[in-house]
Length: 219
Image 1: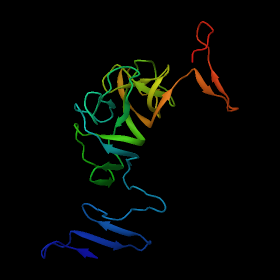
Image 2 (image 1 turned 30 degrees about the vertical axis):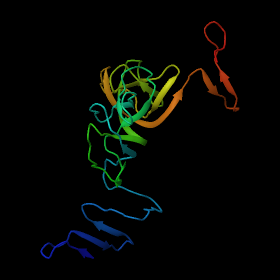
Image 3 (image 1 turned 120 degrees about the horizontal axis):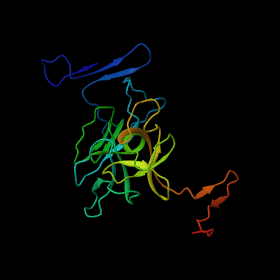
Image 4 (image 1 turned 30 degrees about the horizontal axis):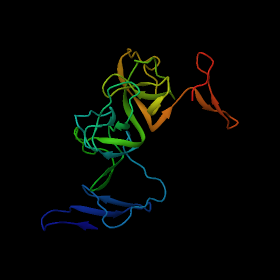
């Protein structure tokens, strides 16, 4: 089925029923108004570099680059800015490089190649995204909790109690990569949380608190 806005063009949009029980939409954009979009089954991308995060627009007080760690700007309502200190409070998330799902005040967009504005960046709410990291607090290993560092917009491995933005899905520098110590990017699972290496839940479900250096417990 072809749809055209004028008499002269072949079509502006097309719906095709293929032989494998698939309906294919061909158009620059697909917008669903007044209804819910329900996907029952698997949502797949034919792109080799498939986007795997959900992001939302946020107004920024300064230009934000893709992959930077951002925090709430206490001087500007509803705005964000780059992180600027170690274990900084107010962590919001990571500026998405290329979100798979993008939310805004006008609706939602699905698929890669979403527009990016440094003053209104797409901040990842969930999923996996590249994150700017450094070796400021030592080598990063897979599974390490990540927090803000002194490098603007950069993260580091968390080794003491404080807020975290997620967990490393790659090491940095990675073994055999030839990467030098310094600043780079690694894939990170977004999970805003609080990390404390001295407080753990045992396999029996019991809360364990490690004593301080003087043998006392600090609560």
